[in-house]
Image (cartoon, rainbow, N blue to C red; front, side):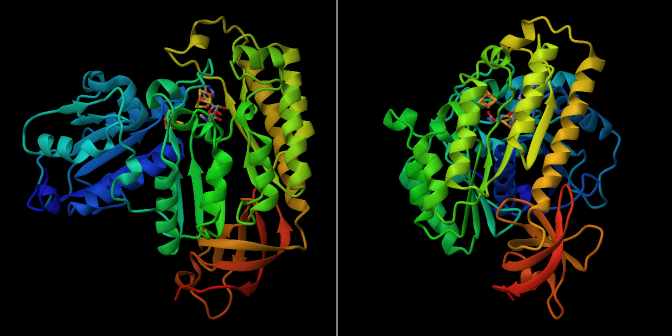
Length: 460
Ligand code: SAH
Ligand code: SF4
Ligand code: F3S
């Protein structure tokens, strides 16, 4: 056990996070654990004695970035007054899980490796490296603990990520996630509700329920998915805004869709990854739905909540994607009219089935398809934002614009970024974490701008 007498008291640490919300959630636990041991968080690698990388390997770009960054730190001097003779570098998250000790070979300046299943071991691993015991790595196949139980320091005190499941059982043929996050495990409903209640009592305004596929929540515990019940129970805690990510179309039930009509706290925003619009590609991706089924879901959701904002993930250039396949994807994206689309060029991941398949579409053709898709995505994002011109939207204030400290930035119910000049007589510290009403006067592709016409609560 680590006592308060440990060397952590003198250390400054920095956490660099890549990848999805799961990693962001876990990083908040890294902050919480190290701070509770007395270490101090700093904003840059230069100022830190200990640097923790929470890594992602879902696509090649994330992988290469980590290796470049760790290697480039080799000759970076330590800060004056550091108690260490060498900077401690730790790699955790999905690359840690995938590569384990092998990372020490490719990254000689690395001291600690941990995985997605043993976040709680980080302090012990750091301590053993710190106390001169040499490099230490620990990667577990499977854990029974949920990282939510560890101390936390949330990036935004008014918003909380709440994992309801970890891991994934879907094995989409392109995807590394099930290999680095393990099998799907659900948390007990009571634990989820207790955590949500704690957040509400602490003044949290927005909870985002997390899982690789929240819709299959409970299958391992109760034999059937019970996600609709989770929504109902978390809504009953009195949370002001509720969101969730991610939904798998094969498991999105009518019961869950109906909640968009009955739970006022459930924000009108749904991220529903389609991945492709060609049934042949969907089949080879092992997605287990057709484009028709997907479009029917969209219709049902819109029938319940006509103003809902929809977003999706699309992969372009999956092995064997033909011109017709891509056209089907393009048409699906165009016909849905998403508010936001996360477009990815297929990236081969060793260890997944698709990595062995012929992938002979020329790079330029894939890039052209990608560019065409991005264009239609931008058009529909712009069109969607235009429909809000002249309306008043409720904004949860997050901070000020990076370019202009006199402009507040926050999120609308539909998850749009909203900018507005700070109202006279208010500082951002009084408004951050509270709600303001903004009259929308300008609608761009990626944000709305307007004037604050109402202030609901100031946390001064
Ligand atoms: N569990 C979520 C998201 C997981 S990863 C879901 O199923 O929707 C986030 C996104 O990354 C995926 O939706 C997919 O679009 C993309 N992705 C995953 N593996 C990829 C790969 N090998 N190449 C390109 N994009 C990929
Ligand atoms: Fe990956 Fe598919 Fe699981 Fe999402 S559902 S994490 S894309 S395997
Ligand atoms: Fe990346 Fe791991 Fe998330 S691979 S997308 S950080 S689960």
